[in-house]
Length: 216
Length: 222
Image (cartoon, rainbow over all chains, first blue to last red; front, side):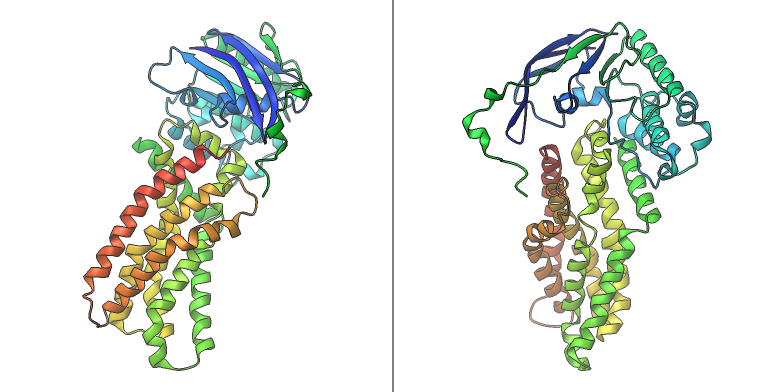
């Protein structure tokens, strides 16, 4: 698939986060999204995942047939989407049945992430890094062309960072797309970098000084 | 689609069983109200058996509200809702599966336990059967109406109060027809089936509009 983002703008709680963001991602390409804290990296990924409406601009995907963009991507973010009371295998089986396009079996995916021994443990018992690796195993359990990774290396040890770099390399070699918001090198050596600059302060409009949300 | 639906249903039932269940919580809450009312009213058996169906229905409505705020909020907090947005099925199917699981763990046990609790308010066997039947037919309406409120307040921390205020007025028709059906079974001018069919209709209407509205609320929660 091919992802085309044109002139994207983001506004949250009436405040302009970024605007005029454009990029195109060809099959097999990776994109590193960088920028200071609060620049809107996570907001960009949330928007691409279809959970946040763009303030302006368009997000288009080509070559995915009749499917919608949210059906063609994986999101691994700060909130890992795992249920603490369920075991790692149960979590992955649920993700596979919900998302469709099954690929590797949950056990094989856990093996690939170096976690064969936690398959039967409730996720609530795992450490932060282990939880993150179970969430990353979701990438292998179902096949989807676009990976949206929000600080994927947070809480990961060096060995697991290497495994993740290998996964991303293989995914891109098969024509997949990777967009990662990060502060550190991820092994996306040849990837392009998109730096989100701070929005100018005078970008705010008069009416935006009202806090429309968060009044609760 | 069937596969995703059954996966969601199985997951929520498993969670309800494993996390010490909100189902058991609302059942205990139901029991507490029904036990306390006779103490408050005094030992007048005629009065109790006359207002018994109303007490059971009132307790059922209040018990439904317990734990309702976690229906979508727990999934919103841990990011499961992001997964569901990207599911291979429409969000409406996700909502339908989740509400069905929630009804199976809260509404249905209430209806099944109501004959037992009817003993505490001196209901006749006929009234017990009638109340259980009306609860079984009416609690789906409560669950689906509640789901709309739960979806609206999914992103609000401690949204339980707002949820109750939003949802309770919409539950009043179900309460009215539920109680009148249960009382019609004990005699009166209205035949039993008239309020009962209205109650069933309310559940069907709530199932359609509630599913669509809750899915829309989740989609536009940002």
